[in-house]
Length: 509
Image (tube, rainbow, N blue to C red; front, side, top):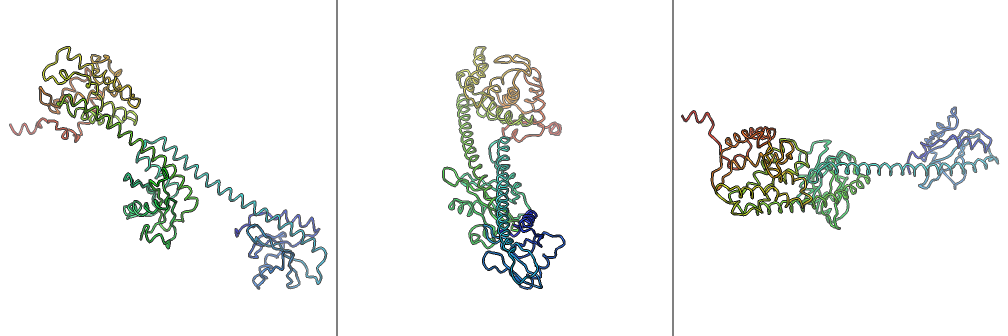
């Protein structure tokens, strides 16, 4: 029973009904279940105080049956009747009249009217409670829908991966006003967390270790949400031992198996986790179950793509051991330039695959031509010029790589239009191809061949500057020069020779 069930009601219409039926302007009051008046019909009446005095003196609203009851005190009589609702006693209806030795017939009409009014008030209380419950339910559903909308919006905007989980957890921690939100998947050694701290947590690493350990194992066995609010909860003996936090943990289930857990942790000073919080936790766990499956499938696809790309590169480089590592080096340098250009996610992905597979067409070049140590004849060079088109023919059948094909196909075009395979000129050459061309030229100069040793970084940069505007895009060259000016670690890692510093040369002289 709600203690304030009667306080929010308007009793004036019940007073009007009482007056109309009995024909008397009664000194009428409505009292709560504790006997205190919550409403009086007459502004000039002291009935509320009069009842308060009686209650203080020990009056306990004794009822002999369900009918009209009587209390005589100090020359006045209090006639009252209990109001009963579905959940028990709601309160009392009361009128104060002059004390009479005999009950007049009019009191019978008063009793009948009280019964009608009491039934009406009980119905109003029941209806209000139903409306309050509906409002609460709608509020909870709104929270769920708001969270689902936020999840859906973030999923559409983010690339799949651990970062996606971290962003979602951050949103959930803020939405639920939780100190820590964590997604734990021990099978993949994944533990992603976000914080929204109301107070510092100096042992957060230990908290995360406990989540990966006993909490995960317990939830895996229970296969149901776990809520631990009470400090004296007996489960604290083996879950989060000696750690002062409230916990909400929901299993993430896939194919009827618990594959991960979703955890909220709060300092003990914060409010308890509620049933509504548990429902929201289950909802997000279901969402993350689907995202986790998608992430796993994408991870498998990426692994397959990597393995396939490596197999193709291995097939190319097995034909010419002197160019081993060329594709990886060109790929790495290309991605450094792409990063400096601040390319978007899709362009970056296409550049990734285009640069990695730019020479895959060399699979179709005869070994006698590809591995020839000396100068190529015109016909042999014609064979070499075929390889970008062969790259296109190999890659064009893979839908996932359609955006990567232009970079691989046109990386041998020249900025002045004298390149191959199509003689494209200037910005008609795809951007990715112009980027790959700079990285490819640099590696061709700095790496060793059967007929010569690799030349220095400085020689390569001078040669690249010389062919700016004829062979290579000057704008891309400027970006590459800016990258190299930072002395990137890959210069040493790729064992690229360096010219002695001018100062060192002068000192030696």
